[in-house]
Amino acid sequence: MAAKAQKKDAAGRINSLRRSADAQSAALPALMLHAEKIANTLSHGEHGRRRSGVGEAFWQFRHYSPGDEAGTIDWRQSAKSQSHFVRENEWQGAQSVWLWCDRSPSMEYCSAFAPQSKQERAFILGLALASLLMRGGERIGLLQTDGPPPASGRAAYSRLAENMALGPHGGNDLPPVIALPRFARLVLIGDFLSPLEATAAIVNAYAAKGIQGHLLQVLDPAEEDLPFTGRVRFEGMQGEGNLTVGRAEDLRGAYHRRVRHHQEGLSALSRAAGWSFASHRTDRPPQLALLALHHLLSGSARRAR
Image 1 (cartoon, one colour):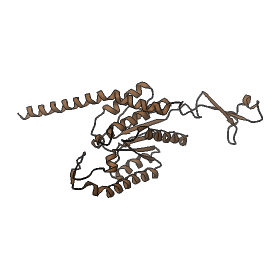
Image 2 (tube, helix red, strand yellow):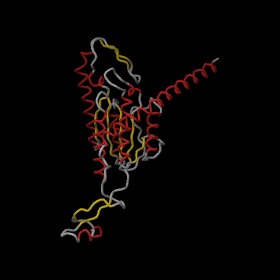
Image 3 (cartoon, one colour):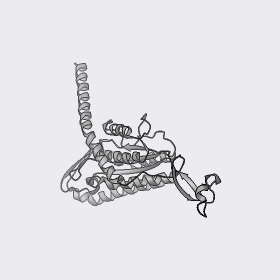
């Protein structure tokens, strides 16, 4: 009887996982379409982040500066004027960017004040960013143990979307620390509600290896505003337990200060490691967060040269 009960429980878990996978698979095309639409609004008129460096394709001429090697002077171009010009080729070595999206249970939260869950918004932002960077020739990979190396192109983008959206849920609320190439760039997207010390340990571990990174905190508006009034029962999504309060509005002031203090702490620990931090709410347009993040990555690429 015990063996039969265990077999029945196992079959129930398998069926539950299958239903969950089917639901996620059905949502994937819409997720990718939404991400592409957002990326298109930002990439209109953009032709990639061209820059000088090692490559064969001509990019531009510039005036000779002290310290330039004589072999870089283009004498034919220089003969046309009174100045010496250096010939620069276009940089062709793609950078690698690693993405991580929080898949912990708290990311599934969606209040009545938001159009979608934190999880869905994180996926959309991650995919839209990947689409933008791949158009600029960058290689993108997911931060995971034994995962495939970063890649570019439409096929790589589709695989990235599948691995991101269809991977196992209920993971840790902080990313793993794995070996990455020096000077790689890392984008971490989650709610980052863990203790600051735990987040700092992850950030410092990567920063010590020369990894440049960006933290993007995604929150539901109810998690920032605490808009509830009267008697409210709060339920923990990750085993924290439940809490019932008689007048939720009485907690609002102290709660706002606690949230602000936590975000200031995330910003400070990021700044100390040479990283950047930004916060995004799911009731606001995703383009705002994507544009800021794309500019930050563009800036980190320039600093790495």
